[in-house]
Image (cartoon, rainbow, N blue to C red; front, top):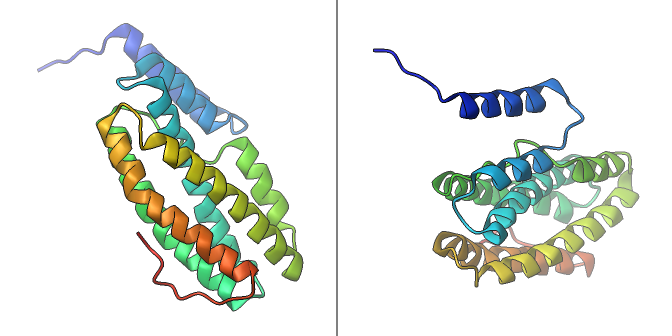
Length: 191
C-alpha cells in the first residue's frame, strides 16, 4: 500500500526541519510562533501563551539545575530541586495540552533566555545567589500575571491548565521571597 504526502505540507515540514537542525543560531521560540501562525486550531492568544509558557518552563528548569550546582545556600539548592521537579511536571502537562491543540512548542530555550543563563553561569558564590533570586522572582511574577490572564481565555483546556498551575506559581513565589528574607523552606510546596 502506497501513501502520498501533500506537496505543500511536506515542503513546509522539510523547511522547518532544516531551519531547526541546520542553523544553531535560530530561535526555537520564534520558529514555534511562525509554525503557529500557519497551523493554529485555537485562538492566537492561547497559542502564544502555550509557546511562551514552554520557554519559561524550560528556562526555570535550567535555573533550578544551576541553583543546585552553583548556590552556596542550602535553601536555594533545595529550591532549585523543587523547581526542577515542579517545572518538569508542568512542562509534561503543557506538552499534552499543546499536542491536543496541535501547537508546536519550542524544543529549546529562546535566544534571550539562553543569554540570561549564560550570564548567570558566570556568577560565582554569593553573586550567583543574589542574581538567581532576582531572576527567578521577576520570572515568577511575570508568570503569575500571564497565568491569571490565561484563566479567562476562550479555550477551555488552556483555562484549566492555567487555573491548575497558578497555585504552584504562587507557592514558588512565596518560597523564593521567604528565602530572600532569610527563611528556609520545606520542599513540600506544590499545587
